[in-house]
Amino acid sequence: NAGVTQTPKFRILKIGQSMTLQCTQDMNHNYMYWYRQDPGMGLKLIYYSVGAGITDKGEVPNGYNVSRSTTEDFPLRLELAAPSQTSVYFCASTSLDRAEYSNQPQHFGDGTRLSIL
Amino acid sequence: AQTVTQSQPEMSVQEAETVTLSCTYDTSESDYYLFWYKQPPSRQMILVIRQEAYKQQNATENRFSVNFQKAAKSFSLKISDSQLGDAAMYFCAFTAGGTSYGKLTFGQGTILTVHP
Image (cartoon, rainbow over all chains, first blue to last red):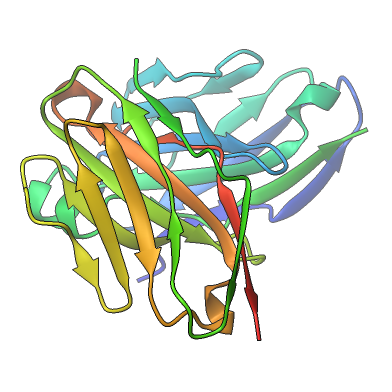
């Protein structure tokens, strides 16, 4: 059981380039999330999804896009990379089952460290 | 909107001693959960302890316990018998129930140093 898998683990981009951060989970979770963590700070929610075809903005969505065509995958797209998007990005997933949620609220991936120069 | 505040950017403790990390939150929700996460240098997010708002009893997990003061909106973490492996960044986090289920709001974090 792999849990939440994020690729790549590290990436350096030039300003203005685009890229997609991949996230996949094998737990059949409906809810998935993208967070960013700036140096020395807590995580902030970028986008989330409550199921295939349904996405919504979080606290800091500007400069990002998401899609959710399957239950398993929730990619995050940066269209025009900017230095302010240098951060560590975490993908997470959650079960709708409250008993399971109470035991393990979110399953996090290992993060993607992204630097934009 | 919910807010979570950790007022201690850094804390330190001697090995085997006890330390308390502070967290306050603000919400108008009645159904919510609170969590403490540990993030070591590997940047993994590790759940330390959780508290359901409807439970009056404070949660305990081995050497970790919380002091949940619902009226004061306070949620502190006590680490007893501190170990070198406890050194990490600690985050307090909040999520409401209902349609906000699972959307975590994090505090700014507290860096914990453990001295041998």
